[in-house]
Image (cartoon, rainbow, N blue to C red):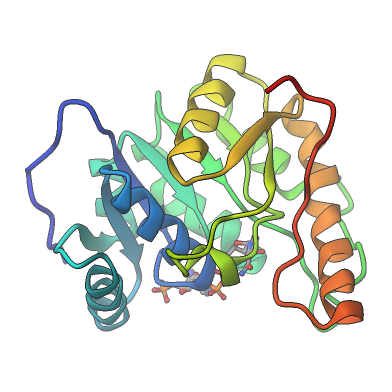
Length: 229
Ligand SMILES: NC(=O)c1ccc[n+]([C@@H]2O[C@H](COP(=O)([O-])OP(=O)(O)OC[C@H]3O[C@@H](n4cnc5c(N)ncnc54)[C@H](OP(=O)(O)O)[C@@H]3O)[C@@H](O)[C@H]2O)c1
């Protein structure tokens, strides 16, 4: 199952978004493709992938985004982004883990426990994303990001994103690279410490969902103050 091209720019990287047919992944894919990166949506379903790619390319006005299976997308990518529900996180990583060596894995997972998604309910071990770093070992640099960025605003290219992105990971160089990719989306990424700190970003999502419910808004976000320009 594939629809990959070999047309890779020298300046831009290839980004695979696993679960990229979903709300969060498709918004990230759209904005990275607009910035000129080669973007491949990973999916279990060719039908869903074809439909989503057609919709995103129509929004971009060009055939910029490709699709493949999650495995093929991970193999082709320089950087892999995980945007699947918490219940599918470990299984999806296991499916691609032998394609990740030496790469950065950006994990957006929030361990939400429906139906009470407005309550902080972290896994017993702490952070869902730190657990993936433990699973993969040092050969893969896992970076946690996007837990607090609402899919609602990502998909609207006309909407200027009004929030910061907390970026956690044990490798500072990997975090810095991810902050560069976040800038390409039109957002500001902030060094937020080692991967264990992802627990705080994961927990904050339930706070933001509570704020959305209380104020009847689609996508509350976070801003960090006091930083130099
Ligand atoms: N939505 C948001 O505003 C938001 C904000 C911040 C962080 N997040 C986090 O980002 C992740 C994705 O969120 P989302 O709202 O985009 O989720 P989603 O739309 O429910 O799912 C994303 C994609 O994951 C794949 N998927 C679903 N169930 C799966 C399974 N059992 N096994 C393997 N793949 C499966 C599906 O792709 P295929 O069927 O095409 O394979 C689906 O399109 C979650 O961890 C979420 O907590 C979301």
